[in-house]
Image (cartoon, rainbow, N blue to C red; front, side):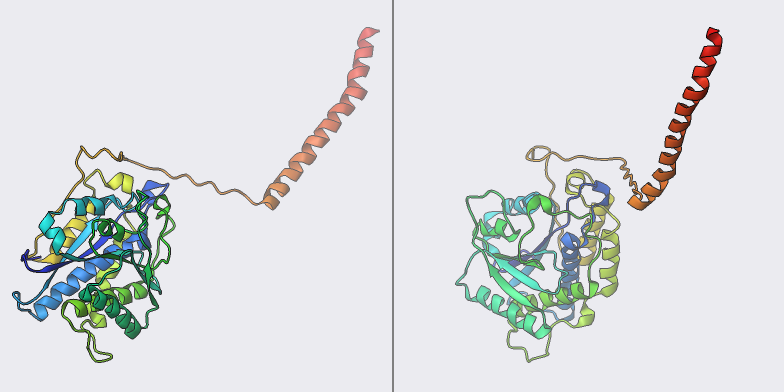
Length: 342
């Protein structure tokens, strides 16, 4: 971002956290680690593109900002906090807020909640369909109006849409996951090949949009397959599968993962400005917790056959003991008593 007053802003947003009943096992590689990896890659790809093909800063109409937020499973509070903190001038310059969630899937859906008559945005929607077709990606636009009677939202872009800012969410899911059901304990793997393909797809249609390259010849692309850094994707896949990102634990402390995410944004952005916002102590809507250690104990129950085979000799022994005691009392105990009487 160069903060030029006449440019339009394209914001790429992803939340990094998830929920889980076991805090230290809350990984969430698809939801929403895949979007975090995609955001890093998109930042690096556009940075290299601008270095490789410098543009006339006075004529170029767009600038990018990349936003990594927390509070995703809590009604996207991090995104809400960011948008609410924007000044009026920046809000008016926001051309598009593109949110990503759970994008390492074969089928890609673009969710939107508001229709537009803006020619540039209409061309963006057409561009996304065209590029998806060229990439061979099953792709659908899903339009669902916002229910203003509800306080919670289904998709992250609805936060922007409620402030009259055009936003979309790219996801591999047709339906939104209920807020408190966005758990990440069993979500411990992703299809890296599909993720890299989808990252390049997003970069391609955004690149064609901002450079007004919608008429590229068939099989001609701005970004090539090797523009997605597979080693970087693998590194962050491994990192995000190692560290827990439970919302109620990481939001109130400086932990190693958050520091790593911040450093990565600074490194990839190069000379661009990096801003950091934190929820203050006055923010009382939710209570956050910390933990020093957490122990998970797992007990494996034996099969019914094993329990039957184990219990059978024990039962036979107890029955035999009972019969033997009855026989002893009848034949020995009473006889001994009579002798003592005489």
